[in-house]
Image (cartoon, rainbow, N blue to C red; front, side, top):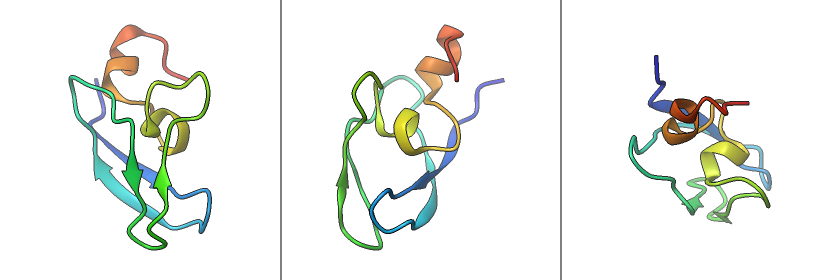
Length: 67
């Protein structure tokens, strides 16, 4: 079953927040609500959820390439 929510952890301040993930697209940017940093995916990742989330994004989960 595809998970549609993930906890994002900011690599700058460590703040964590649960967010809804888009089910049919990858999210390329995310602004931390604590320190206002703009997060971008790490090289090789398709989106911020794959880089900083507790679960990968739904498109990656559905591709069967989940970490």
